[in-house]
Image 1 (cartoon, helix red, strand yellow):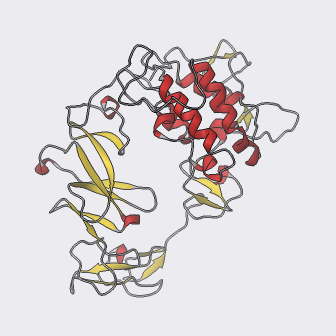
Image 2 (image 1 turned 90 degrees about the horizontal axis):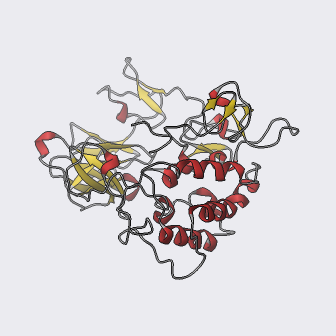
Image 3 (image 1 turned 180 degrees about the vertical axis):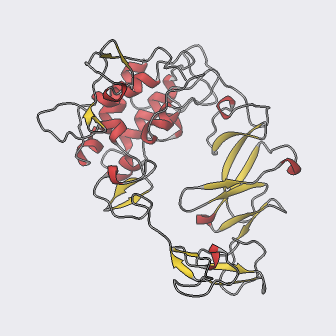
Length: 360
């Protein structure tokens, strides 16, 4: 089944987040408290209000703030045949956005609350944690963490701290993660922990427990079981300081060296090549950063890229509307000669249109 892939800033809102619909397309297990604050009786009302609430972020970022791109993208993502509309979640989402008006966190991820992410839930998957699955899209969303299909079982991955059990892997400070649950571990748990290194923990695959990261001089049992400035020395089973650039790394392992270096085949720590656009590198705009990063305060960092919501700033002031990869990005009805000229990435008969298979 084809899926429309949206950029990171809208992925949470437009993802196929499963639920079982009620009479109005909402689900009691997902619904937020919509008894107070703005009400969005239809998905069009929600889209208009949601986009209007985010336009101050667009203006602050120097991007178009006419809400055209935002409305188009949300309407596109909500048009799938298996997508429904949750009035309760949508209304709660709008209340949450209203409470964050003027707060910088709104523009750096405040729009990605559970309710906002489930304003357009999917009816194609309703499996609860612990139920059998073939794909992660079959697993119901959870407030506790990301829902995924782990070795044939729907599991919720929760950020873990020292002592949490069972752990299924580790979450790293750079945003990456590793899941180490294998066939020998048996059936996957309905809820498992990703031990979060930013919370001072790593997953011990033998005990399936999040263990506290050991400090310099302390005993260690895992190769990555020490704080980031140290590594576990296999000879002494203690955490020792990582070697600086130019120092020896006799074991040949990169973790012997500081984070900005690697162990070369000469047995010395050498500076890692820096990829332009990678985490921490200088930037003047999002275009200079990898697609999963945003330019924040002059360096590429984890964060929300606003172009999918706002549209890209035009290099030519005479060209109105959103931009895409340097070419005019037209909404539906705009003329086109190739797919990339359309916000919908679908050019048919010389006009931008909604793809016929746009459903989740």
